[in-house]
Picture 1 (tube, rainbow, N blue to C red):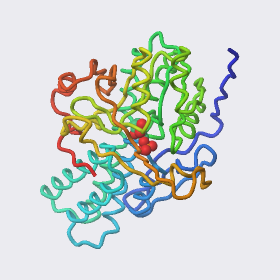
Picture 2 (picture 1 turned 90 degrees about the vertical axis):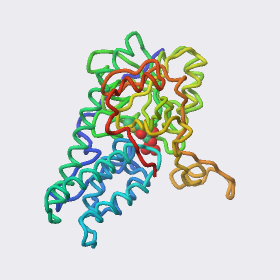
Picture 3 (picture 1 turned 30 degrees about the horizontal axis):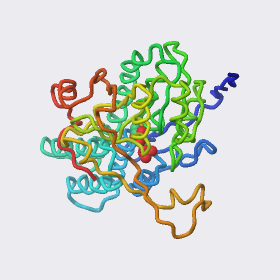
Length: 372
Ligand code: MRU
């Protein structure tokens, strides 16, 4: 088959997914992902509401990136609050962001970490507002920086799974746009490329909001990785034709038994992989595990606006008044997952025991997390 050589476009490195500009009086700059890949537009967030709405409308999205954005958003929320009580300022900013999106548990992990740290700081020392804001900003920067390192470690641990694999399928977007840098499932593919593996990636477009077509295709192209875009409904045929030997996706919340919530359509990919004898892998940091819930039945699934299904770029594609069901995520049962790559290694097989062994001291990220 004659395949076009991808053109890497490194002429203008794209702006960072998230960037805090300045000190605690500064602001958060986000790359508006709703405009990609056509326009590179940044949003300057100088108040908490701008961050909240950016999360809600997916201008910033992907489980780790949502958590990082909210951590910076708390700085803005605390700064603008009129409450006398500093602890109350932090609590209400965290409550506010907890109501932005319900499924990705990284958000609740970050907010819990911020609440706990705040309690400790305020108990240890008398802080004024500036002192608190400086600490909150340092904490947000640390959450951001730690995620960079988690992504790199996931990439390193995942590459051995792809030895002998020529074609790999992925769903949604799990790269630098969804995280601090490098990504989760895409980090494995980027690291494979760094190590000289020649992979051909099949990218599910990911209806309804097209994170695969708009974001993953763009990120792979930026890096010069061979990529072919397909409609979600083409995955079965792609597998039947023997074009892929593995699938790898990210996650928004993984229960204690390994059931995994990810972008709607992921469950179908896992079922297709089972039918074709292809291993289906998940790549996610410990911050995506929610060991407080036994199974995927307890994962809250975000329901989004019908207009995301009935319209494309403001253009109506379905009849006025049609009933719509639009769950943003689905849950893949653990028994369909061949392995979960984390920053510590690969969980294989995937079940409650292997997950417990993988995190011998329960990860701080994974306990008693409140859903939105
Ligand atoms: O609705 P989104 O775009 O935030 O959904 C994102 C996903 O489902 C990703 O696969 C997941 O967050 C993993 S990101 C590293």
